[in-house]
Image (cartoon, rainbow, N blue to C red; front, side, top):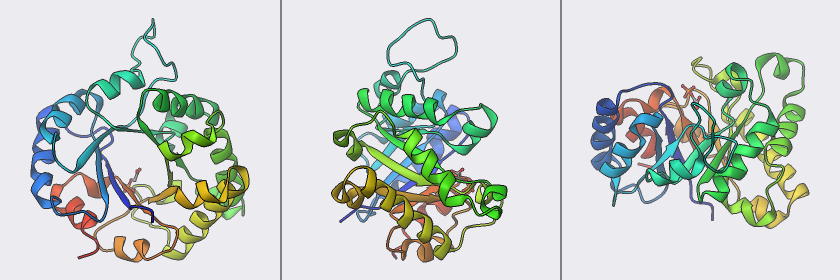
Length: 252
Ligand code: PGA
């Protein structure tokens, strides 16, 4: 059985104070959520304060990015995975489409980040997803397959249990336009097949694949009913504790 994961990506929102306040507000609202893992991803500057305040709770903390290099060095502005781990984080998002689009991250870069995360003891949430043009051109499956293989290259079979994949169609992020549960299920099943072919049916069966893109309290239940959807990566609707808690508690 794959334990579902509901992760909130706070993107570049909230000061340290606002982040801690939102995390503290969320804590009691999801305290009984044993059916899934709950993760929030604040900005770098708030990671330590949020992780400290959530210690002993059922909410895990994730960063939204990490450096490709594993050890410290002269790399102005970068933050290594082991430094993220040091703040009390357990996860890191890599290859989010906003980073691929605005910061020109390639699959090769994402793969290095995923490897750095693994070596630091973090679980990498590796994002893939096609643009609207690619979908309209009938290339969605090919694009996602290429991203998946490229972004996970360099990881061995034994690393795969430290990876979560997030399928986030770019056309559904922040647009209010969600993929239908059927569209998402089709891609998730495809991702699992690609994984089974490249690695093993066992690894594919254990892989958790999250859907992301305009997930809201009113569409989460329909998505979670799909066989291959193992959770969600939530942007906008994760910023407020009550709406994120509603998503976490989709099973009520
Ligand atoms: P959204 O963002 O829920 O606001 O569409 C999802 C994401 O980018 O992870």
